[in-house]
Length: 323
Ligand code: SF4
Image (cartoon, rainbow, N blue to C red):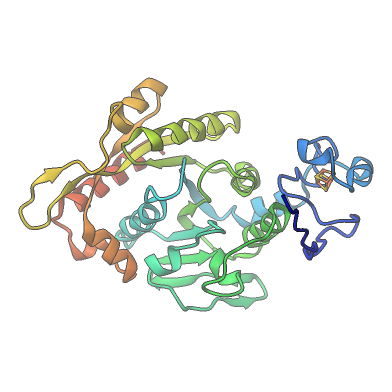
């Protein structure tokens, strides 16, 4: 087979290194620098072994930046496509329905940032002041900030390697000026990828309340949720509960209910019981949710009497009880 070699045009982010960090790099200044699996064939190995190690000096800066926020909730999913961002947007709208609360929604999903569209902030630009980046306000008490605002172009795929993505996520966490908030809802990358692990490491010490995990009912999604739950346990992140999304379909016309994704092994509820984590509820599929998210509108405001709205508000109540 003919091997095609492409020139390595990636920029070197760390001035100490000879070559850009490869994929799965543990970080040249981390405790595992020079010792990880990715280090074995890396030409920076010797340099990284000799670089100073120690606590990440940016973590206290991130902690300070987020110290004016009462509650921080991570929204996680085992895999993409289960409606994590959709749920994040609806949770944000639901909390912001209380005028007494100040809410923020943070989109850290670097490969698929979709909150600007879902919260009606697509095309907005963020402003920088002396105190940092100012969130975009989609209503009086709901501000949002997405990593999408810091990416080059709307339709361009993000093909950066781990270290560069992590640098951007860190900058984002350090520089956004949220001010005083009651709740910050954080949409994270799906799965347990490099940047997902970084996001959790950067945020872990900032006093997050815990993680809400979104799944769909079928076994293929639940398998990945098990990994996510295992990850949270290893990373000492409290699991606030599991939400089953797309749990049955309620026809908006006849109100008949059918199952699109079959819970062949009992779905999210059975998994929650098995693993001893709270089950926060099930949200049925409703095609109008997708339309509301595409239009950047609150489904809860548009269809307050729908079974999906009732289910979402029940989940939010259970979530607040668990905090
Ligand atoms: S030696 Fe390891 S830590 Fe250093 S750049 Fe290579 S992969 Fe990253």
